[in-house]
Length: 250
Image (cartoon, rainbow, N blue to C red):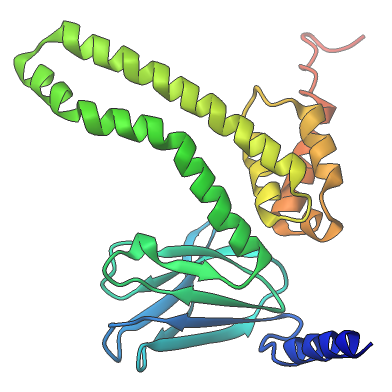
């Protein structure tokens, strides 16, 4: 009984310590080795392009951002002078932790929420699938450059054919990975983004996509991407409009 009470007490403490309330977000960041005063920009994207949502300065290797948000969405933070932004998922009632690696921005770490943990794992698994393609490019780039300089069309054609074959294999493996993930992760925001992308592919099985969408949690279905998927499914199910009659109907 004492153990149960201790566990319940710990749970209460964890809830009480959460910085983000309903409809709010908190980004707690560290930027070890980054000088004071460096700017960090929080950005998202809509149909018109990138939108800056907030800006803060690094102080003593740390930064924090707070704000309002109603549903999960992809955002990025950009450290002043860094070559690339850091992508992550922002959502209401959650605190995201970002550890910036100033020397290798791609090695920066994002954690603290289910969706961000899933995003990190998913991208790592995709990288494993794509490694065969990356390795081929790394190994054969010098040979391709030499063939181009020598105008050796036979060598160029051979390398391009080999590359195309691997590209197709990797593409098929990645596509299968996307579908399997969406089918097995109904509460993940990534799943609805996968379905949104799939519906832009004319070879997608619409019935399977619809069945997968229907299994997603309601809160995921009701996000902006979820509503877009629902609308796309409705259009695909209705089929193309009938062509106008020539000469008018009698």
